[in-house]
Image 1 (cartoon, rainbow, N blue to C red):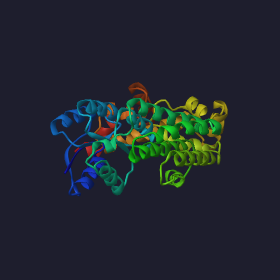
Image 2 (image 1 turned 135 degrees about the vertical axis):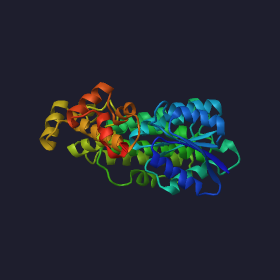
Image 3 (image 1 turned 180 degrees about the vertical axis):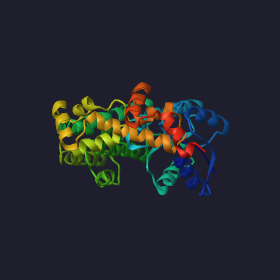
Image 4 (image 1 turned 45 degrees about the vertical axis):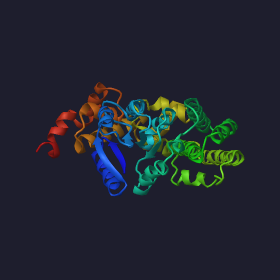
Length: 348
């Protein structure tokens, strides 16, 4: 029996994970909680085989909680459950020896298969992700460098980085370790392209078709070069449009650093030009568009959850409480707490 602890601050996601896991005879949810501090405490209490943990949580995020759990017991396996917008944090987990991650929304078969793959053999060495901590850092940093070349549309830099990546992946100790980093590479490409383009088709699946079955160094090198070239082909299909900018904003507005300056740098376009064209097409400024998305997200959380207001403004992407309250009062003519008190759900 695989004992599983679920750490998730969204109640519906927690219920969903618990339901599908408890349906399987060889799995049991031994505990649940909704923040990172309790996750560390319950790990010591229940000693689970696996922890499935969200990244964005109050008190202590999933990365920090997972590092504490690994220090307490390195044998406990950890799967991070994250949204696309949080993928930049999920990938850091590989550096610290986390075992896998899922991207929301995830279907039942993907969740169960991921868990079963972690426990399909008795030899724990099968699940070591690389030969050393230094190796893990080099792999993640190399993938991050490729991401920068992809953003900058620098194909020659991407091909050079892929050469280094091919050797690092080929040197991994087994097939599972090699595929872990290849999948991480593909997911990084997909999230990067989705953040800057209005791409509808399955990028991960498309790029996976270039992989050879036998992961020798030669096959890995050839496959990753093909993946690199195809990624830049997708990248170059469109260079800039307001639709692409809007898609990027909608995927990243919860990041408090996102604004006109940051977006103009990402798309390599003059911020005055971007501001003017965006206003012409959307009849709203870039920063106001971002603020409206954050306010809508905050309103949704106030009306549909019991999260503290102090957590909500951070989740929605506001830099501080003062900015949040000022924006909220201006748009809705009431304070966040007044909105909650007037909501029937929390006024029974």
